[in-house]
Length: 316
Image (cartoon, rainbow, N blue to C red; front, side, top):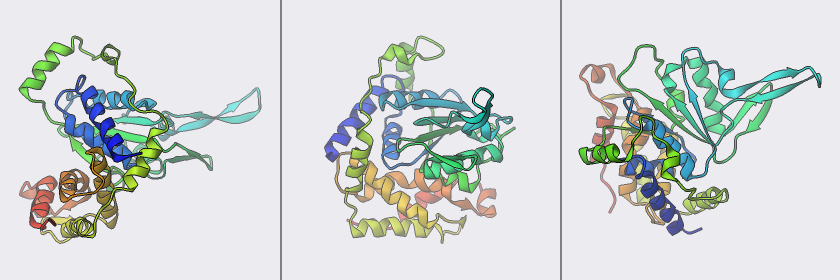
């Protein structure tokens, strides 16, 4: 597969989803790049900004099996993973698979469930497998988690621990659309609950696409000077005065891999500094920890990462 084919799919994906979800073209591009890079995405936005609709549209366009879990305080790990039930007819235990056995899992309001249940996703997101009763079950190469959380409502929530946040390749903030986009919404969406069937979204890829596309992404070149640029940005987060904890070495690999995927989605077979810069905030901001003094001053991790990127000289 050529990079140009991946770019064509990316363009078709943006155009198709733009008929349903207005004003999120750049986020659709990053979601597609994340899937190609075998990463997961955390969407953060206030209610009503089409986070769920965006996930459903991506699943239908990429022909992925879709399941949604509404995370609540009383949700248990077995509600996510499944459990073994005794079959009286056969006299044996049989596995009743939970909703995590899918291709695109929407973990809705993931921070509303306690850490015990949040941790049920750790193995699945890292290793794409689930272990139940000592038996490991594969989830498949296409397994992709899109999680959502509300940034303003904190009562009754459980902040995601660093180990969970690190499982997400990108954290994308979903803001309000422009006035023109909202005018389009008012004319297109005639129901309080949008009906995807009414938009006739077509599957853009088949089951064989993913492995071929990932092989093509792996072949995207990243020259020595750009690799050094990636390393310098990540290392600079560990030395910034406003950060108590910088990004880990794993972030270097993630930033390089995501840059390759984004380059392919944009039709290029090599990575340029612009790709790294486009991803830096979304990939690094949720992996760093502010100092208490920076928090008191009201600094944001996103602003700190922007400062870091501006301070590191990009190769020509």
